[in-house]
Length: 431
Image (cartoon, rainbow, N blue to C red; front, side, top):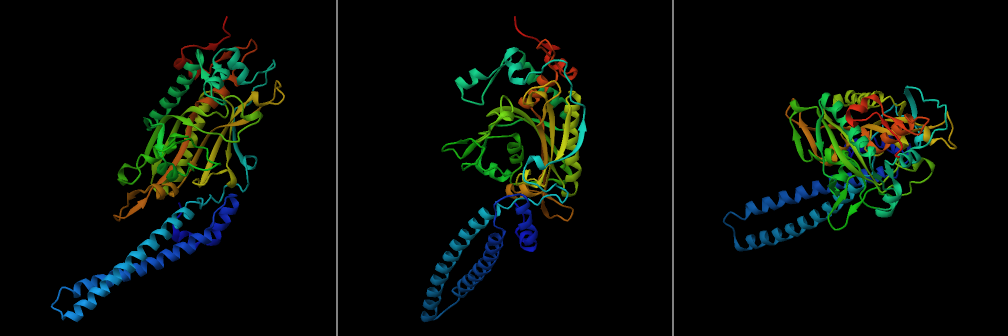
């Protein structure tokens, strides 16, 4: 959430930012409601002061007529205060609702654009492999190697669910531990977070729990939701807290299941594990001083690069365009891994880039919603900056491993970094 004074003082820039992000929000309404709230607050304070003056006057020795007049005035003031409080509460609710629709200001260097095709490639690591055989996609590999069962997932749970089995189980566990070990060495405190969070926490982070466009599974009658990422539970961990300055930065790594409706997700590039309703993810989260968030954003990106470089998976880094940022983000980097199986039709040198991680600097946007502050050197409470980043989304990492390390005989050779965690070097077809 942006500061209302900032919106009022920078109205044209805020409206342009909304347009650049292709979002629907009414900055003029926010300013009008903000001004109205200010006026109502002043009026209410004046009425309360009159009530206090009236009450003080009642304490003295008074003539009967004077006391009766003061009593009558007191009743009128009470009614006026009640009406002013009710009107103020309504305006504050409207202001909060409209204010939450205003996205964070985008970084001035973020590319202008509407969707992911407008993202700007800034770095490439590794070269896509050219196979001397016809490569398969991860769906065929997973079925042939008997490590992924999509049919049983659909039968038992519905479309976009799946079973991991045999070596697939150890591949998921190995990828998880591989990422957690890297993060722990870098000072991240590991967490296993709840898979459920209150709607108020989701709204604070910037997720919409309701509506046709929501990507969230809500739990009916409970006021809670299944989380789509541990960003939600790590971000809510310190809600309504004043953090000690000397404890910042706080680096957290959260392991959780992630649940997403993926409404409307379809097509060639959404098949298999790429867009599913449930997957496992290790999420990074940082609370820091405002002047340091740019530095920590680069740190999160470097950790993501280290994880995928260590796996030997080719990837590129893109600077996310304004229309693809998401409301809370000031700036976002995406890592896109090379996925040979995304070629259509399949070819020995084909493939496409597929997003495997992202990291966002959300500045104080989420902290304002969740009321997370620190005490500065002058003793004043100020909002922290909050950042998040995917260390590893297991389902998409599995895609990249299977498709990049497949061999001519249909087996998959594991990246060397994973062998100690998985306990085997090759996944072969079952007899």
